Amino acid sequence: MPERQSSRKDAIRNREAVLAAADALFTRRESPEDVTMADVATAAGVGKGTLFRAFGDRAGLLRALYEARLEPIRQAVETGPPPLGPATPPHDRVPALLDAVLCFKLDNRRLALALEEGGSGSPYRAEHYERWHSLLRAVLEQIPGLDDSDFTAHALLAATRADLIEHLAGERIARERMRAQLANFVTRVLAS
Image (cartoon, rainbow, N blue to C red; front, top):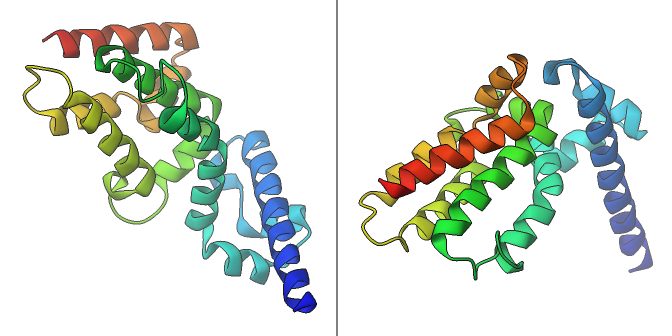
């Protein structure tokens, strides 16, 4: 039994080291494509086999890092106070949720871009997208007179796609201006 606990502790320590190394590499590198699994393994001080066993592939590593960075927001959404928490009125919560997504992607541009561009299949089938879409749809369904909460949730999330954010940032649109533009857009959609 002690040997099993020791190997479990090693696995946890290795996972934390890999996530920390990947986090640092994605933060420092200009392009997400510049970060390889070999780079991450070397920076974490683990073998590539350990990396592949723990995360499967590069997309699995990206998802795990994304989820680790997203955890504080998820907790605020699930159990936190307004404006993100569940007790917030829908007209206030929808803009706050989208602002949180925008700010998260601005703070994690390279990682968000790598995750949305990489992977296989449709980005709309990704677990993180489906989770945000489901949450937004549920909140939108609470707004009287809103006809199609499913489509509206997709349309609102489109305004927070990583490639769009990257494009706008490349055009030197300031963070606060992006946030204000998104808030105005969400307000107009909800008002109509």
